[in-house]
Length: 235
Ligand SMILES: [Zn+2]
Ligand SMILES: [Zn+2]
Image (cartoon, rainbow, N blue to C red; front, side):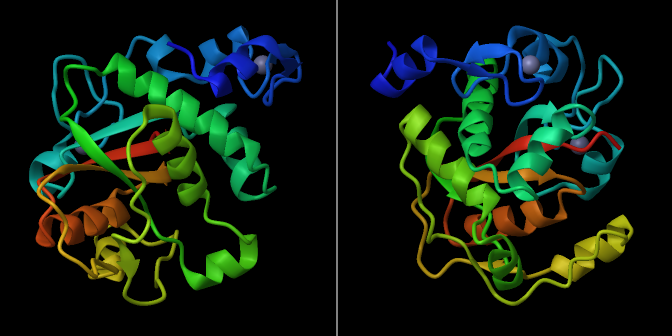
């Protein structure tokens, strides 16, 4: 059944946020949907971190050796051209309506995984650093999480995770150094109920940040974590 919000989106015609052609309000046109949405493409992705892998495999070699604290990852699009332009639109240009779009794409992707996903009971955004918040004025992950919690009717728990320090995250770091730089970055202030939690981020790159968030939530009582990300890097 459509919500009022969905019905408005269906009947209003607007420009596709990626190519500018006619599309339902706030949605991608059919062509761009086919170009960027993973569920529109045949492919094989690591069940745990959603990186592209060879057909027939369940997990990538990195997840097999590293064993991330999150059980699965749902990624709506690849972080590559042209979908990455949408991420840039949100994060760099502050087009907040794109958070609604990513929530919608994530909800569609989650629906396509129905039966394979554990029963999520809460949505938690990855907290932004104070520096990033000052720079952007908003947390992209929190905006996507808020819209997703509304779309799939799960409670948003924005206070369950907090940062313990300013991040030392450096994009140029290798995987091991990156993991080390974010170790202990998150903590929970309260005991978390023994439920499956969906942790939302805009882009999953190495997975080190998501691992730390999942580790903190599980240590505080969560049964398990599924990463819900708008985009997954393709390397
Ligand atoms: Zn388009
Ligand atoms: Zn993996």
